[in-house]
Amino acid sequence: MDELRRRITGGGVDELIWAEVPKSSKAPKQVRKAVAAGVDLLVVWGGDGMVQRSLDVVAQEKGGSKIPVAIIPAGTGNLLATNLGIPHNLEKAVDIALHGKRHRIDLGKLGGEYFGVMAGVGFDGAMINDADRKMKERLGKLAYVWAGVRHVNGEAATARILVDGVKWFDDEASCVLIGNVGTITGGINAFDDAKPDDGWLDVGVATAQGAMQWARALGTMAVGRSDRSPFVRTTRARRIDVKLKSKMEYELDGGARTKTKSFTASVSPGAVKICVPRESPEAA
Image (tube, rainbow, N blue to C red):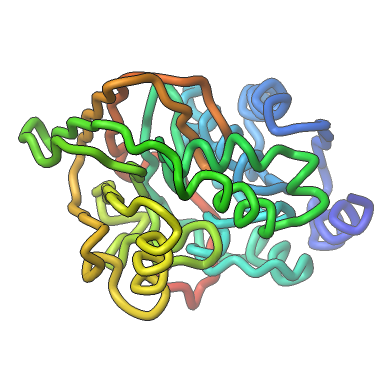
């Protein structure tokens, strides 16, 4: 924290509003104060959960979407930062915050909350729910692997999915994933053509069951296009309506949420302004 503060003030920032929170759920209150104060730049230091909570406030608050947001990766996954080309190196990340390109990206919205990376239910939601904070602190990304192994033989749920009002899927699914970017947990390229500024959400359904089928599906995703797997189906939409036969956990950007039987996700084009590298494709 001290190094981050020194690098920001050393970069020519004379007036600094500083707030530290013990966990991501405490971030919204401080972000609201910053937005109300009319800051010129909001710097978020943390993982995807902290970033999601912060971007949700920025997108919700009046005038918030005008404030550029800089992400300083410091979590387990850092998926939004990775997809935007923001490095984990503190010096380089701060340089992007102060001198990078200000670029608008889309956000997804589900259950009244905005998200920048993904939302998932089924295998994905259960895995995130099991990979609690203490486990992630001890094992890092391996926490998701460990939690995932416990759920590969879980019972598939019947899901009915509408994309832009048209029935697209009505069958058993072990996972429903909605993405705003392409790369997800573990560096897996779940959505090959996804871009955070294209005005679309990508949706994928995995029908793999058991360790062998999941190994085949993830193997295909790791070395080729995810839509070439016989256990994966993907498409794009601006609105996705999901109905489940029974309640299941869901997650937003790696943060577990309560169980639900139905939800709607929609895209909010250009919802927030993010500091990205000038050479980044998203900054073109």
